[in-house]
Length: 402
Image 1 (cartoon, rainbow, N blue to C red):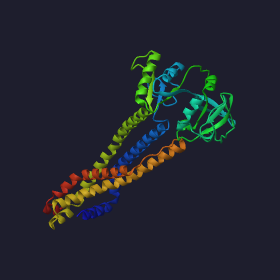
Image 2: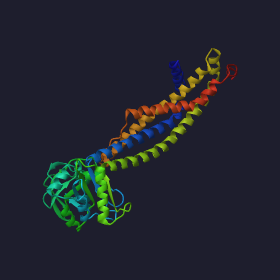
Image 3: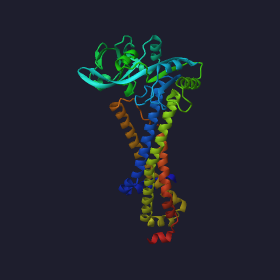
Image 4: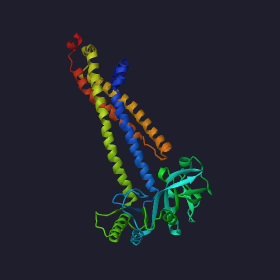
């Protein structure tokens, strides 16, 4: 019986192909937008999780200001982290090692071209160097870690993306008028911020920018046997005591990598829900379009309905035939929408990687495709139920008079 319903539905749709195509546009747009938004949202969440996993799961990051501004801190906040804060963190039980970094924007000259580039000042003592080697963001593809005062390590795509030139080991680069020698090329991270920055010794950074006692952020590693969450709370207490601040009035933020990932996930999830809700409006419009189309189809096929009933078709047969047709319209819109949404997702991938140097992959999963198609089919069936019910309730004698 279902095979017959599908055959009737397909013949009807193809007979009115132009109207059918216009009818499914709303479903197509709605499903396409939802698929693209969910795929991109999941891709962003996976990217954030992957990138922060590179820092390490047993890490606690301290940044100035009451909100977290990222691993490199922010120069936009008035509050600062000082040497005394670093010492307070280093004295917390459970903290294995803690080091501060200083980030600034500088004028960098290479191959006769001058550009503004993010500069990261890193400590160069042996313990700090060993610590940095455990953070995947700072892996070295070629060369070595920082040693001399005027050594410089460049991001993987700094030369090609900023200067349109290849930067090699041993090349000379000027930073705010000071000459540096390239001793290392960082491995590609897929994050524009890290792939297009330069890294120099912390003491040199302070000298060039005339900063004596300041950090943009502090990275700390927690001992394996010590709970990371407890270490973070202990760090907060130590910093409140050091800075003379009360709880909930802190001018600093302390975050574990797990908390950062969870926070980003919550934000992305909220944004995703809002946009999917907006996209769902197109589905409502599409559903109304299917309903109108099915009412028209019922009117056009009134005589056919009468003939079918006169030769023994039951009300349930008529109902099923029109409901399946409406569901098929929804399914067609769903298939086109999934194709369009996947296409938009792949376009977003290309833009992220080629224009913004972000290693991003939208996730168009099998579950997402199946769910979208099923949802579209159900929307179509629900939209076609009332027109189908009207068709099923027709009396054969009245229908055949028309």
